[in-house]
Amino acid sequence: MRLVIQRVLSAKVTVEDKTVGEISQGVLVYLGIKKNDSASAIDYLINKLIHLRMFSDEKDRMNLSLLDKKYSCLLISQFTLYADLQSGRRPSFTAAEHPEKAKELYLQFIQKLKEHLPVQTGEFGAKMQVSSTNDGPVTFVLDSV
Image (cartoon, one colour):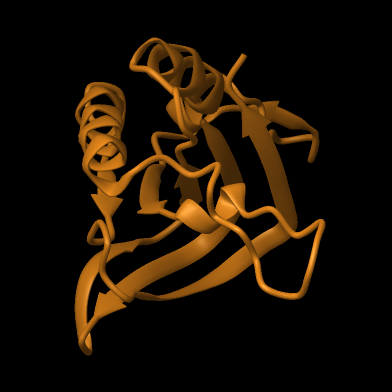
């Protein structure tokens, strides 16, 4: 699994002109699931995400986590995070997990993340429009081990 984590002042996701998820300050997280990923990666990624010191303290140092700040997460599924761009001009998505299995893991990820902080989501498999105001900008890529 792969997370792209962006620190944001605000973010929202719409599907067919309807807002389905929206947060104020926190993180916008894109979640990619590759073939053979398993639920065992979820706990590792969530633990890293919620404890990652990516927010500024009173001395403007990145010392505070999502939990410390009590911020929210907007989680978006994104199979294109596992696109292979090495050959040709068209991306290959053969490394991405099949939608049925990916959706199952995505829903498990949401359920477990909600145990720690407020979570808004997009709509799995839908054509979504995501907008955000990045803070910093601060962006991290986190892969499961």
